[in-house]
Length: 338
Image 1 (cartoon, rainbow, N blue to C red):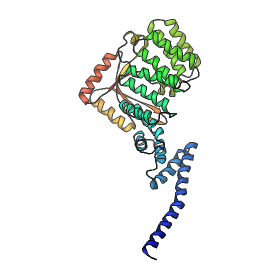
Image 2: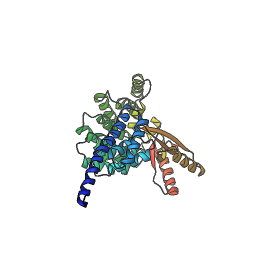
Image 3: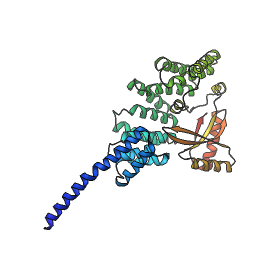
Image 4: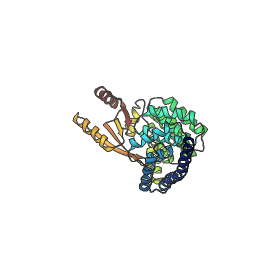
């Protein structure tokens, strides 16, 4: 057998091995996905880890590895690999996951960077309404109020049948309330009650109406809507609704509204993907003489730990503390409402 014949022989052998091994690898990934869809996450993760040992660059597998990862930071690492690849496999889904993670972590500029690229890359994606909603929330959080309003209106106009249209309408109402436009906010909350009665935004609209009427001094209607909310939802507003519709950060001190609604303000130090890091920040702040508070929230089966300092009746007081902390730590912090 000469060299050319030997080379041809090796090529045949390698081709045969490839076709013999590939179906097994493919079956392993399919089995992992099947376990995942059934909610059998432990077996899914075991199967997927085994598969990734031989296929570390399989983007579909990396996406599911991110979904199965309990540590938010590590999960984001998987999604970044998929989002940054030239492949289109699970790229849309990974972009959405990263937006959710960055927003929970308070990294709104990163949300805006991804959403901008997402809109250009996937102009017809079914995930686009949610991406636009997250973008609007981050625009508001970074002080771009008019752009946030425009973004919410675009969702309603372009995706009227999407469940995110109701959240966009709620966002508009909340923005006007945060600016002290209580009468306008009532009109916007009313649109939710009229158009989106079957959505998760509906109970929040009832609560918003009560809050807005209270701010205008109409106590009777404030009580009416609050009682209506309690009657319709005796168990309280669904926790997932509260996660989706985070409180809007007021961009200017509403004065009277704070007293009427009992709004409190804190300085948010950070959102951490694991409790150990949050605990370390708590200890550091305590050693500096502060009295920090820690809370947790779960978004799509991932738990985030939030550390805040202070509890003030006015926005201006919270801003003073934020500026003091920023000078001391050399970091940028946010004032949030409670």
